[in-house]
Image (tube, rainbow, N blue to C red):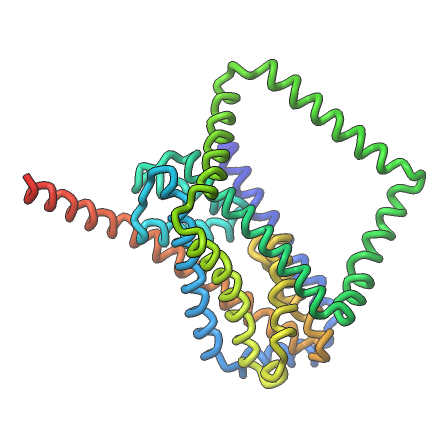
Length: 346
């Protein structure tokens, strides 16, 4: 009962946070501007969204191949179909709660491929680390290519407000000492708890997960085809970028935007997905703010943000539901074939 209430509480929190960001953006719009947004959504060319979703499908194929490659050095060779469906189930679960997707897709492989949860979870964490590193490089590349345009925006919209809040909070100049003391206390607490609870069942479970994670990291150094692995790691993000850019063709105002504009929108909007679960509410607002740098009216930018976010979210929802339905059916069929082969062989 407590776990159910906690889950409901998390869902309500993230949904409420998304609604808050929608209200934050829409509250200052006039009725005419709201009408402009609605007209843009109604008159958009949705063929380009379908193309975007098609490209997104290929990015998930690359992600599935890459994940499968990470598990092979540990001696596990899961069927591609199960890995692919597990990836979509993971994305679907992540729309509800943060990090639930990582647990869900590892659970799928534990059930249908008999891969120990901690082993596959280690590879997922490795995947996430690679993605964070890749995105960091993309963020720096975006700044380098559009430094003059983007740096002023970051300075005014991000750095200055944060600095003002930090100054107000740290009026006495003691923040650095507080943070240092907090780090020291955290380390000491960890060492104390480790010595006190190292023989408990909980500690052993945590240790198993940690060992699985380390084995997942080690698998990265034992990949049979590193060039192929790098190719798919790059293709995931290239396809993410292209599937963002092609949607610009939905509206006349954004149709002629440059590749660099698409790159900036792709990078900054991705941050929105990291900040708020699924990017609800904040994703369209960030797209609108970014497109202002390229002289796109706020209402058109906001409409574009909703087109991008809705297309991607609907795809993940539908693909997740279809995957949940197909997974037991596909494995029932596969297991039937395996049994028939064993009978024939005997």
